[in-house]
Amino acid sequence: MNQLKDVLARIFTRQLLLVTIMAAAIFMLLVLFMDQVAMPLYTKHGEALPVPNILAKRFETAREILEQQGLEAVKAGEKHDPNLPFGFVLEQNPRPDRLVKKGRRVYLTISVGEREVQVPQLVGLSENNAKETLKSFGFRVGEIEYEYDPNEPPEVVIYQSIPGDALANSGTAVDMTVSLGKPTENVTVPSVFGKPLQLARKELKKSGLIIGEITYRVDPTLLPNTILSQSPEAGEVVPFGQMIDLLATVINEADLEN
Image (tube, rainbow, N blue to C red):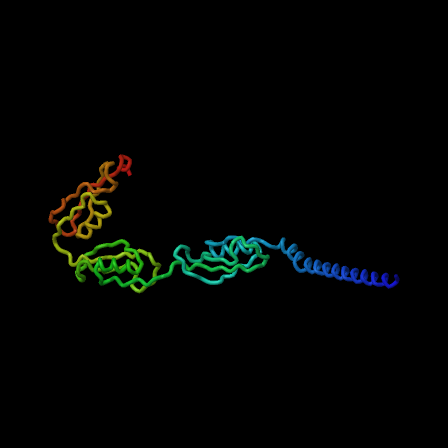
């Protein structure tokens, strides 16, 4: 009987010890979890703040916005971009709305604008060749003026608005002046009937003629500034530098007063 009591007592003692050890282990794990995970999350939760969106803003403006939020702006690099002007924020890391701690550095990539391209040499080329060359280099053909030049053959470029070998943004318009060759004493008046006034100016100048008086008539059936008549008429031979008077359209009577 006593032996049975001793055996039961030992079993009970072992079970109690095991339960105590397990309870202590669970308590220690709980304390560790609270100390290392729960409490840091709780305490840092109030410190976390979203990163503002400063994309497409000037670097100086972006820096002010970040500093107001308790963050630090760091210029991480520069990139060419055809759509964003020089000095504007192209990329940011961390991205907008991400939660970060106060004092976090935000790395910014700044646009340096569109990549610059070397302008081709146009002087000495024919007008058509110069146009094709500009397009092949990624530039646009700008305004084309025509001048008589006794030292250059006709249809040769004698001037370009951006010098050859200079650097300019792709897509920039380059103006040109094209030689009309040696001026002649007499010229044949070209027809500018039905053409826009701006085009008529160019064609008359190209022929060595000058725009004289421009009068207007109301005609709502045609676009404004369409040429209705000219004097002298097309086909007449006139001295070089002759003035050509034009009659152009307007839409209504109010335009005549302006």
